[in-house]
Image 1 (cartoon, rainbow, N blue to C red):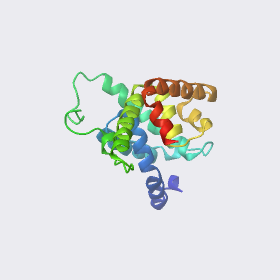
Image 2: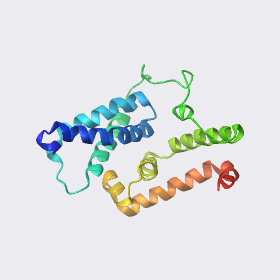
Image 3: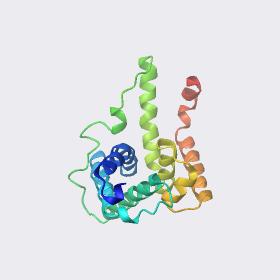
Image 4: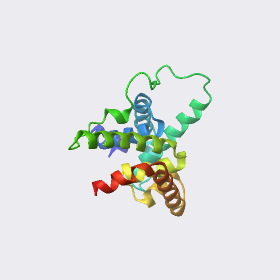
Length: 186
């Protein structure tokens, strides 16, 4: 058990949750370098607060709560800065994260359209209010049930479902021009 200082148990947890927590944090803050730092912070907090885990909820709920709070702390601190971070990637410096994803589509036209849709989806997700975005990411990218998301974000399950509905409606409106393309894929 990692709480008793078992290094192998901590390593197993680290290997299992490192990538999902990193992806969650990238989606929350929009920057891979910052997300990597925040991921390290999450696991440091996990070690420092191991004795606070009471097994009253799932471990994944607990670690995603730590990740969410770490991201929120970062956003709060960033709002108080009057200058851009030197580590922050500029849109001029290179391709966006979504453009780095390879597409194995059957045709160049379809691949081009899929890449365009992926970029539009990432932009639309980034435009969502934070509370809707985090619910959407936890549900769609991490497959969490609504009850667990409610624990992570400290809200009632009805509130979480409502946030998800509003997120889906906003995404549907934002991506309406891709409706015919999506129908072709079915």
